[in-house]
Length: 445
Image 1: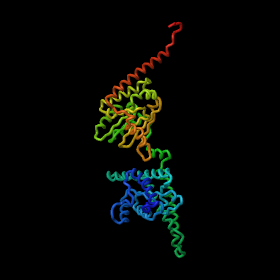
Image 2: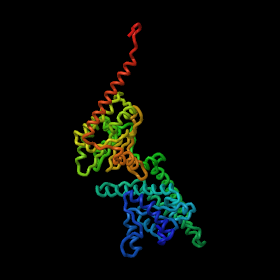
Image 3: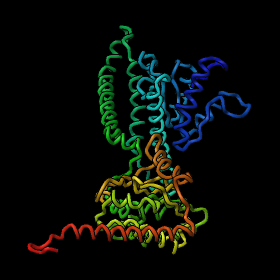
Image 4: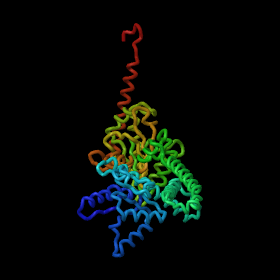
């Protein structure tokens, strides 16, 4: 990219482009990122740049200001037939100022004065860089295993893009400057030129078709940007068919948010007992972090009134589930992993933060709290994962005004709350029965 002289407005502008638009998404996609002026060493700068252009897994080129050095370096990179991403100021593209030979390549626009434009450019860079990164990994794995490597549609599209540009350049070189003396000889080139033009049109059509295949629908693109992995009809299916396996594979840590741990199970195979045993086994591994955020006992009445669970309409059900959950966790040596949140959670949540994936099951009112749909998210740039994890788990967990760690006083308090809820349930039932009793006719009592 252009640098501009130290202390100039151009230098400050391109430094901002590098820091905020290029480097951030490139690093998040898994690469180390370095600019030409950051190269260490005392060798000839041109030789150093060429060496880096050959070795780099990915090159990003900013074509703004039509800097000659940038075009030379981009051309050198194209000759290597290796991945590259081109960006440019939106003004440059709108004015059609890019040279013909690079105009055929996809160039991502940005406008520094527009935050949405900056975000869009950054996200597109991340998506492309991640795609190249995944393809590089696939190729490396195939080389290690000796399996045949099958290129993705994205790689095919990239190859076609380069080939199409070469075809266009070749056609542009065929101009009507031939002398009369050689007209007969050159007439033989007419038909091949026509064929070449037809081939170019065919390649363009293939490229457009591939582009449509590679680019998802608007909804799919939005889902990808938000990090949606899958959607399930309810939590039982989500745990049974997907997230139990992720919990088994997790090697760094698991976070859980719920009114109780009653919902920590799948439809059949992934039972509550199996998952508790899995958590117990994981918690004994060195460096593994298990954190469980449950509803505080002072708030179970509200949770029960809100849910009116399909299991039992009696108000003590949530209090019993919470007491049973803590007793179970305590018997498995997991009680110290528990904190109690002063409020009712809005989503049953499981987070495998080594894999950076999260299961969300919203808590609507009444029986839908148990049956509600569930979504699995992965961590993506600008997606749901980080913000939701921070707000729904990390901040409450670390806030002593919101959460109470497990201690020896917790079980007596839970038992006390359970007895209170049972007594209230009994009183409610007696009131309901008495309201149904109608004195018999003629009875003075």
